[in-house]
Image 1 (cartoon, rainbow, N blue to C red):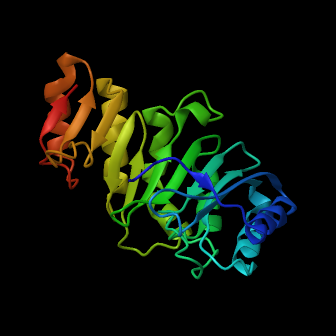
Image 2: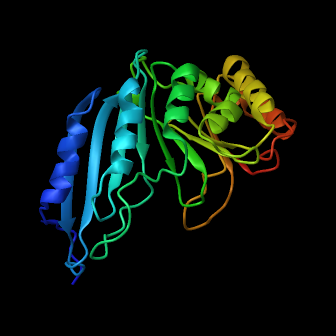
Length: 260
């Protein structure tokens, strides 16, 4: 039967990779694990989580790709910058090694070095988790509780919207790529060319109509699959808010709007 309990499968080769990474400049911690879960006891999974400063990131990636470890490794990186920005970088999945083969080289689906540099430039002091989700879209999740600034408010996240094209370019994504931004106060997908219109709308909603939270696109539950806009704002402002969304020209302009 399937069991979520992990059973350790130590490996000298795997431990050697973790030790090599731990000795690299800029690395402050390494956590490694190699395990199986029933019923897949013949297909170990391996993961390494590294905390490193921005200057040491290229060295970690180079070392990970040059090791001769014979299986897959799922990598998670926590990158600290000189401006107290924290960027977490995660791979999509931790597929079992299938008895050998595969590659230990990180496969994030984007340029981690370039993205960290852009995030640090755009929102210094924030904690951002970056990954490619199942739909193939680059997603940035703001982790308010880990940010050096007081909170990841709607206003503090607007630079991510305004510079979405530059963030995607830094990540090595193409000009038609979309960027998803996810946070407790803001959730949306920026399509190409929407940056200015989205910033203008959100700035006006926050400054003139006391909007505190704004979520769009992914707000439908998995069960209903409905795309909608959800907004937290005073009741007296809601008519004007809806008019502004409808007139925004954004791809969400005709979505149903729910005030919560």
